[in-house]
Length: 193
Image (cartoon, rainbow, N blue to C red; front, side, top):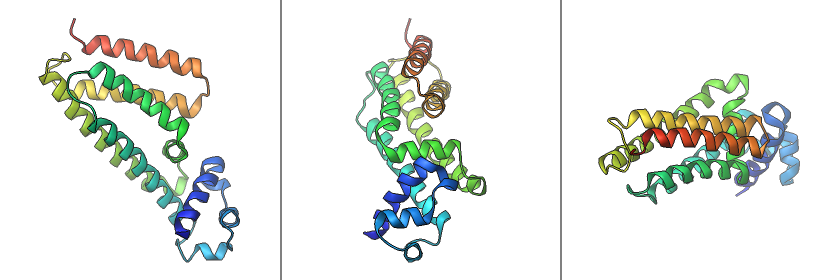
């Protein structure tokens, strides 16, 4: 139980201050323990950081898997646009996902390889799910296409673009404009004419 409290406090400080700005002393104070007591639960700051990161990754993956498990093969326009809205909502409403996104863009230098491995893992899983969905939509003649890979990668480009806006720019109008423009061009390219 105390490990989870420590991770919650760590999430708060890592999200606000980044890896370098967060201290184990702050985290320990937040949960009412001495800094040394953290070492009974975690090997050190790196271990704590990576466990918080993996928890955040699992939360993001779980949210996306749940979303995709609830959609069929008849409404790709609604389902894909809904996924883009989900990405935005998750970042705005969930501290774990805000942390995940920020750390995947700005990893601590000495943890780049470990974080890169986690990012690639989730990206590959999401791409595989999306590719399967695009294949279903193509088979159902709900969208136009010969191969599921091309629209999958194009759609993930929109997702990446939105994530950049969320991390770097805090401008709702710019985010909305970019989403609408990207979505319009993308949908026009895959919908039946």
